[in-house]
Image 1 (cartoon, rainbow, N blue to C red):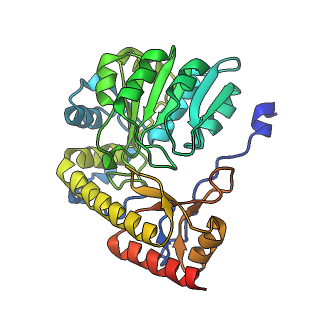
Image 2: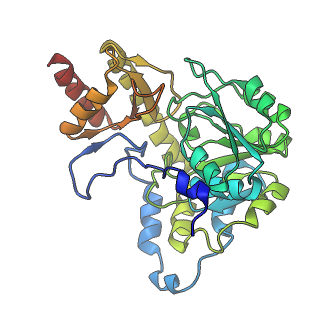
Length: 348
């Protein structure tokens, strides 16, 4: 009944989700600690519920116009999807098949591997060095039909110089997908490369910077010819009416999003300083999380100790990551509770 590659592959494992209403401090899946824009709340109050009997706009025209205005690109350079994961799935479906090759540096976002395994294509994972430098030459030499680069990278938070991304784009024969899920917390973006090079697609999401992880809305920015190919494999109505409405409101309130991102970045710096004082080795991050190695390397023990105290962080039980924790930047109060809990655990 099922294809052999599907039988053989492990499922994607998302981060833990505590029960609704629990008092857990959730610092494990990189959600924004602040609520969505008041403009989103107003749009929700004004939403015409009777419109839900009709199918949503299959092309998300209002949202695409709002995104195009923000990024200063034509509307046909925007393709909306049910979260940026949906856009990743479209790219894999349109470009990859047995005998074709996907390439990405590792460790990175695990969904790249999962989606590629679904297509039973050849997977080339190019390892980062210990400092998470981007292996540009090796990625180019691998010759992927699709190359994925998360910038900033997860789980490290690394954002490499744009010159390296351009070098990779010009050197690769296939499609370069720059996954900018966390770009709202970084210093710059690869959007300008989309205007210069037809083989570059940039992905964005409203889950992180816009505090809309529960809504599921993302978009691709790329040459219309490329997006036209992706449009052939998209769902018939990929973005529901409520997501189109609220996402448009969020996109139009850039001032609120930017103010929240600034607060997160300030808290990130204080968290890095606090962790460093506690003996952690913390990787430089341009995201809303940090990757940190406790002084004794016992990340699993610390993860469990924090969980026992009602604080969730992300532990990866896999090589090169099993001595580290990925910690989402919370509010100042949440970060203080985290550091107090770490202090209790370390003193024991």
